[in-house]
Image (cartoon, rainbow, N blue to C red; front, side, top):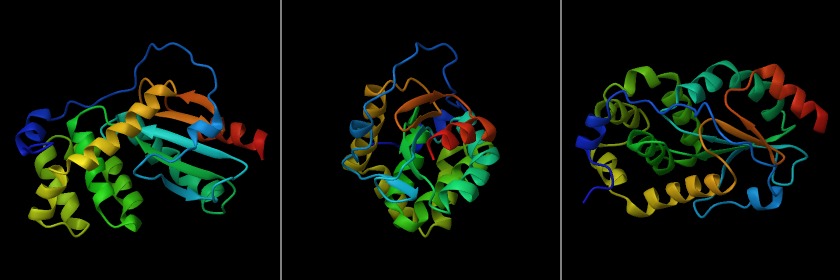
Length: 206
């Protein structure tokens, strides 16, 4: 049986998962534990492991607040800190519904160099593809070289789905309740962050 069926994606429609508005505060986490890669491995950009500053983001592919961050803040953060390898940026999947899980499965099943470009597409076109996830995700996957057969096989990949959900469960263990959530050297920053707010936190540590 499919882990995620096309029917399930169709029924999901535009039910976007949003950041939880009221949540308890959590203490900073053990950074060494946080930075242990999950079984699927971490998807990271910028500086190598052991960087002076590491940001870990937990996000859902269907979260409009995550999309806003990646449209408005991420390009400048990437240009100023990630691309020059001043910091390490780790993206971790925290799917809040089946369409988000399916999107992340596609990104993980694509060639590694296509992972972050696909994440960008998911966020940039969220309002379009999430209206009809089955068709929208297939069209995006085809741009990354997927055939219909590979697309269907990816959504049936129980091991891949389990690995992504284990990443999500790991986030819960560290206190993540909604998306986006960021850990900056173990300090939890919840919800959308402005460029100036996250820059100020980074600059304190560099």
